[in-house]
Length: 395
Image (cartoon, rainbow, N blue to C red; front, side, top):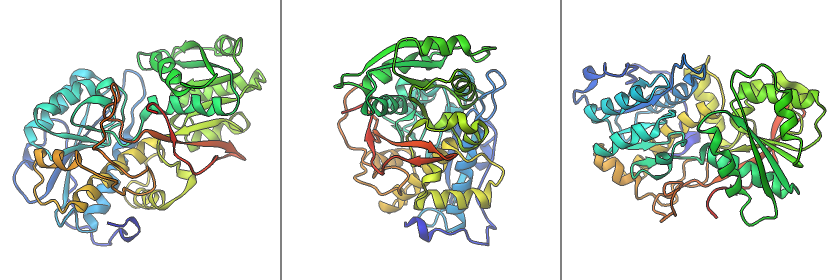
């Protein structure tokens, strides 16, 4: 299925897009001839104010376009959704709902609680396709099919990018959280085999009132800086670096510098290096053009960033995998089998071709897409440094 041939049709009657809450999907459980899939993620998050509704928006946009084009092998998609509310117990409830509903797969999950979700999906032989990999299980569960290296790969890639540009000691600053505390480990993996050292890790609370002291810490000993933060926190940190007139090279993940943050920061964003697990939206390409068209048509108010990209890509990869293998049996076990035996599947140019049969070393047994792209903010826009895909955690 060629991406440029998938233009949105004008007739969308019969669109099988079901937006249900967790536990309310029983009315879609009947065999209506559609392919039922589920999205699990932090659609809302009142505790940490880091909801990611745009990840679901990306899934919804792709589902709408696939259905408008006739579905997957002639069958429409029915999308169930479950909000884990950034809570481990809610995430587990969502996974149990997926098993009860016998969905073909979960698609594009964006949750901090992959360990809770995947342990339950394993019992139902349900594949998790295109989830954001954060926890150890996200990289190792036999039902896990991440389509990107996630934060771990972006941090490793950012460290390697700084090393390639001559950095001898990289100082780290990250959000003060269990995930943030792992950045030193990921950065160390990224510079393995080089002469670059990874220095201290400075953890910054989300509610820190002032960043000056943290800036002083990361500029004290190294000759380069790596930030592992969400966009709001990274924006404040980059602003503080600019105010302190810090001249050291700075690298961040693409999630920390979405287009709106680049615009907001202005000069404070200029020259910053960016590690991206998906082809950045400003870099264009066939997949991004289709992604933008789908979002404009079906989710015009959603944020356009790596999270909405990831949700969109998960649906695209599922559809292409099923169509390439002429699948008509969408039972969880059969979908899992198909996903486990992909060889150089072309899923578009947002990621390299997908192979899921590699025998990969622990702890990244399921890191099928072990590459990132390098970019830099220039004249207010994110531009690729080169067209290469650079290895991250596994070498």
